Length: 481
Image (tube, rainbow, N blue to C red; front, side):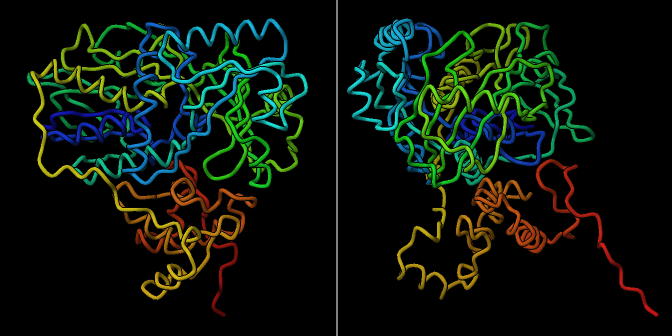
């Protein structure tokens, strides 16, 4: 029997698993998909919010405030790119300026540090390309940008280094209470755990209802994005929001940690928890609305569009509590924005609940706080590159020319704990396929490397989900005369 089973390997589940691995516990992390961070975590705005937006007194406000300053240490320990570039919430008329003033006052109540309302002239000093319509903004210097899927992978990898067992492609189909905890069914596989932590994202309500009556609902809200080539990455230098509406923070424009430009999202309530399609109507909408921020964006440099689902809770706030009907079953649900920003604090808050239920936890000796550094070949100087190639010639073979990613880097991320098993998993960890050609040239080579390293037939290598096959057979068969 495991001590703790964490269901869901998104940014919340992986943060909790990693922090739990500091303790003398037998932990399993269960994920229904083929990879870590395959849901909301891989498709969001990647913003670490400063903390002025959430309603004062809510868990969102409290945990955003606590979580934001934790990113520097965590990202340094786990070698994940993170930058504090600050944010601007801009207004284009006097009514929107009233909203900006309300955000400022809310931020003061939430303890958001160093926020300031800027005049039209002060905004332009920070962003030369801002729209002429902008008349003022709320400036928050502690806002930042991160790579959420890389962070989730790093957390899972570090958790694995500290003894957490990771089960991918393990969809939970049933949970039953047993004498000392819970029996969790994943198809034909069954395991038992004393405690269960439900981090199942848009499916958190369904997982809860396996052990208790319905106490909350999770509604999927889809948001679509454009990501532009690195040639557009310097159009803005801050995260730029529009004055928020009742549907959320609106369309934003932001650099990414890898030098691209991200534009989006819209907000569309849907019923299908798997519907991450993009539509021309909504993509055109975010392009049109983004002009309120700047007209400098040339959408002809768009390299891809994507969408993600936010887990909108019926309660209006994060749901982080032990089930009233199922002792030892902790729900961590409805983690919509600012969920990423709050994630490290959500992990601590959840573990405090577990300590209270179980009467405390014992720290283990030898916790490994850092993971093995990620070798990013193109960031090395010429001498370092030559020395690395001398040790391992695979670092001298460039596989992805758009992003300048070498075979050595791809082999490394395949063979780590929580390593890549699909083409998209390689893409999210090491970036081949993230550039202009979107894998058109490097994709076949990535498949060959995966097949070789995993000792699989190349026809078994999938794009992302288990049924997203790429090859079915040869187009021409040689026939013996």
